[in-house]
Length: 229
Image (cartoon, helix red, strand yellow):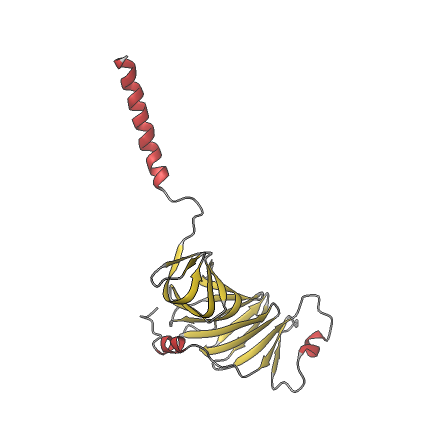
C-alpha cells in the first residue's frame, strides 16, 4: 500500500504545482486599469459610488448626479464631468479617452499628451501637440456643443475633418447619411453668424457663444505642463 501511495502522492503534488500559476494568472480579457479618481461628489464609477483614489478600468461608466462632479486622471489627460453627465472610459488604438453618453465633459491633456472623445458618431481630439482642453456637451443624438478652451481641436466623422480654433465655440449638427440635398442649408437657422460645412454635408458648424464651465477645470488648465497629469 505504501509503495502505491507514494507515486500517487507525487503525481498529485506535480499537478498542483502546474495548476497553481494558471489559477493565479489574471483571467483572459480582464479589464485593464486606465486611471484614477481625482475628485468625486455625488458621482459613480461603474456600479459603485466614486471615491477619491479609486481605480478606473477600461469600460467603466462614469456618471454624475444632480449637483455632482467627477474628475478622473487618464494617463496624460483628465476628464471632468459636470452634473447629470455620463461617459464610458475606453482604451483606443491611439490613446486613452472616453465616449460621451450624456451631459457635458471637459477633457484636458498636457503638452505632448493626447485624448480622444467620441460623441454622436463624431471624434474630437487635440489638433496640436500643445496643452489642450475641450468642452463638449451632448444636446441630442444629432447635436453637440463644442468649445476649444485651450489649443485647437480636430473634429472628424469618417473622412470629413474640421478644425475648431482655440477660444471658438460651435453648435455641431449631424445629418444622417441619407439626408436629402439641401438638408444642410435647411438646418441652419436664419442669420447664423458663421457656418462651416463638411464636404459631404455629414455635419455642419454654427458659430455660437458657449461659456466655459468648472472652476476646478480652470485651475487644472492653468497648471497644465509636461510634468503634470
